[in-house]
Amino acid sequence: MEDMTTVRRWTALLALSLGGFGIGLTEFVAMGLLPDISRDLLPQLYAQSSAKAVAHGGWMITAYALGVVVGAPTIAALTARLPRKTLVLGLLGLFTLGTVASALAPGFPLVLAARFLAALPHGAYFGAAGLLAAAILGPGSQGKGFAVVLGGLTAANVFGVPLITRLGQAAGWRVAYLAIAAMFALTLVFVLLSVPHQSADPTGSPRAELRAFRSPQVWLVATTAAVGFGGFFAIDSYIAPVTTQVAGLSESAVPWVLVAIGLGMTAGNALGGWASDRNLRRSLLSGFVVFIASMAAFAVLAHNPYTLFLGAFFLGAAGLFLGPAMQSRLIGVAPGAQLMGAAVSQSAMNIANSLGAALGGLVIAAGWGYTAPSWVGVALGATGLALAAASFALDARRRNTTPTPDPAQLQPTP
Image (cartoon, rainbow, N blue to C red; front, side, top):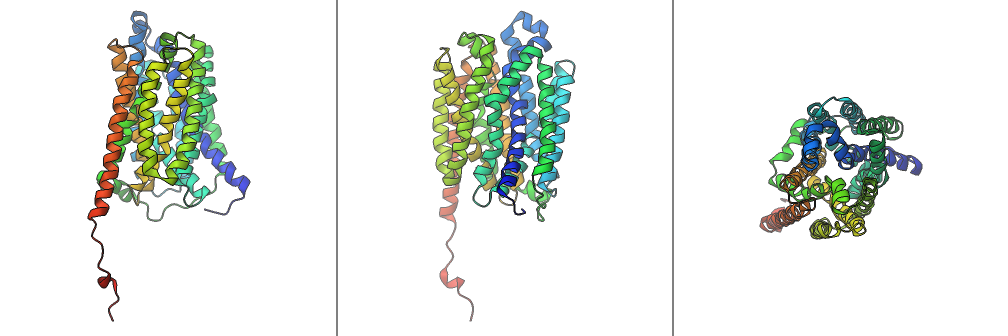
């Protein structure tokens, strides 16, 4: 990485973070507009039962998540020899095209296909941009580098998603997605002009990146993220009906609840990046405990229009505290395949997105109410905590069983 002035360094980091901002918009705006999207694309089902239509509309969120799962490892393997700036620019171009297709596709099946397409570059972007940010910040800044890029996503939830949600409610959800596409196009230009060139990894290859999947720890840590983080999406996917049907607030309050979640995510992400660089094990295990508590608290606090905002903030903070730690943990257990490790982390998070949205929709469709996904989240979070503890125990066992070299054997032969 070339020498950079302070202004150039922070401009480049802002550009990479802006990509995370766009991803936050395209991923999370569906949560606030889900009733509008369901009413437009599923009019007959919505007329029969708005709850069933919203639950069915949740498959739009699931389709995006599945696109991330497929795209992240595939793109990471195929682009292993590309310079990371070149990769980031290509991914931003794919985001722009996929989001335009989402806005223009007629009918629910084609919108699902477009959301899948738009999601393909998601995981690889966070991986490549996070590694670029870490290189710009310097050694020992891996967690902070990923927190910078994730910070764009959390900022999107503070003011971007609420604003785009209001735009979608006023002008239509398709207009909202066209605005998001414009944001991706702007980010592409910003990255092109500000981010320095970084040479491709000379040892990078599809085979080296795919070798990460030989490690049992990669699978265990990915499963930890996929299951343990699912509760966040089980709740967040249905935040609009919780606001209107459970707390009794008007539709205009939905963006403000999203602001509360976004503020919590911003605080949690910043703290999580710092904590994971200091003590990764402690930040993951303690983070899961607080995350489980936040989901249980949300089920209770959501019934009151005032405490709903407190519960939303707590949920966002506890959930995103785990983000940089999970990213760093997966890179750590995939030596020699940093891009794949970072991309797989995003795949795992979006399996969590798909799993959480699907399970949340199931319990709602079963008639258990809009707060039932919170208890689904508690169960998923407890499972994630157990898996994280097992992963660290496996590390400790491996260290204890590794034979210590005999000092005599290390002496040079005379």
